[in-house]
Length: 115
Length: 114
Image (cartoon, rainbow over all chains, first blue to last red; front, side):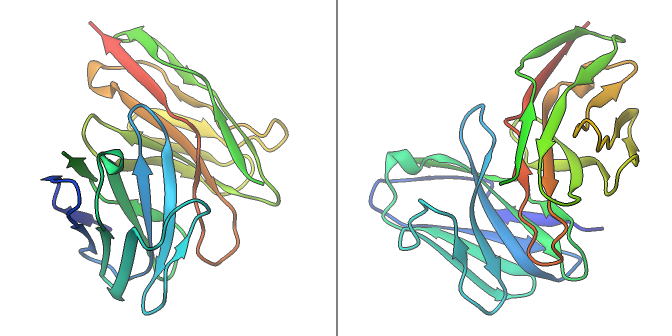
């Protein structure tokens, strides 16, 4: 149980375009989902906390207009990277917290490459 | 604030060697502690956890004991395998009952050779 999927697993896009990444909890409901960014050989940086039905809470230094987060249901959160630039290239990982607990379950990640 | 400090890697071991990856933390209250593993090109998988002092988390031959007196949660395995090669992250979350953010260490890369 407690499986989280991400789609797509890899995406290449051109500079200036927007890319949407989906995060789904497959077998549980997740009131809260988290979005992380991981740079090569670095730890995970929390970008934002996404709560179902409300606005996401962004960490300091993360541009909310660039990284749009929507958590429309208890099983789906999306991250849209708008007007992507090469410096947005990274590994994006989501996690979902079960409604009744505090443990987070991670998705397999999405590798974004902006050319 | 909360923080997690891990030993610098990479750690290179021969198969069947003993593994220790050190992790210490700073946190207010009584955090829960975790070890996550990340295999190449994949997301994080929870390896083990401990939620209170003196708890021992264990899984797949790995163990870690929550030591409040030394604020540590060192990861150990008695005999590593090549398949254990991965990056290991120590993490904590405060027991707030609300959206519990995870604070990660920088990760330690383990490479096991034949």
